[in-house]
Image (cartoon, rainbow, N blue to C red; front, side, top):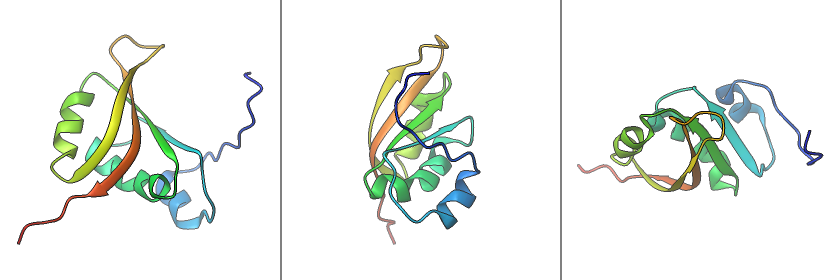
Length: 101
């Protein structure tokens, strides 16, 4: 235990997003979905000031490249302390790209 104050909402993010009426400091997900889909889930929270910490595997660079086709993302990658092949994508901003047409 770190002693840090926290409230953990152990719930599917899609359900949580529909029912939560408040603000968060951090939203996180692990092995949930490819990055383009995951960003859709976390965007409402990031939009209101939360930072998204997304635990991703060795393909995170390719996932971010794919996601950049659909999203404008402000992100940084941090090395995982539990897996040499994994990284944490720290998302500070995510907005949908304008569709041409």
